[in-house]
Image 1 (cartoon, rainbow, N blue to C red):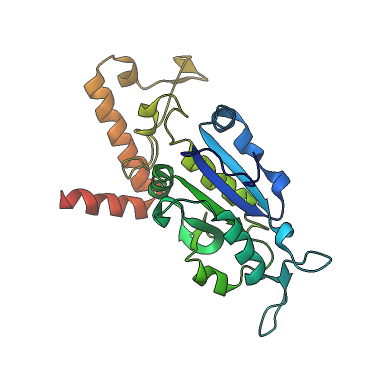
Image 2 (tube, rainbow, N blue to C red):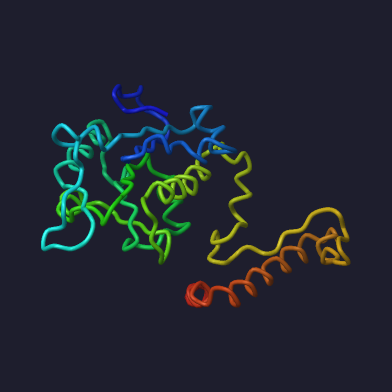
Length: 250
């Protein structure tokens, strides 16, 4: 992990630039398991920019009171703008290959499809919000994409940023080691994943479904598809409706 003070040799690996008031939070969980190993092996790059470095005055202020009054503080457009200009100085064109993302509860829901699109690009700059949010003018000026993890509020965007990066990085070439494992997991085909089992064959009076031990690959595939459809229909009616509508058009 590093600050992007010296541009890496071109072309670099897939790169995440994270603007945060708490750079010590990174890599966090991203430094463990497969994403951590991939980071150590140079399969992707993580750079943090401390927003406080771009703050104003003796105390490096980054926020101010909301225009129009109200509780809390708002991250200043001039401070965030300076950080974004620094982060963007050597990012490639077109911008679609390197989006600027603000983790915000009012953003569009993050999806597996968006994770795949991020992984297909060259990198992303992620803004970890704090306080009451970010001045709208900098969002508009930099065409920042707002992404939400769900209908809840966190104290800051660092956890959300790590979740987004984990979802994208695991899809990069050679990170998982078995590309087929992403083809059957939840959301890959618009359905939730089927149940999984492993040894022992019987546990606590419960057995593995016999079809999974049959060795008949066609029957196993049919069972998994049926279970994925059942679980999706029961747990996520929204996904099920979208799946049915999509399959009806084919």
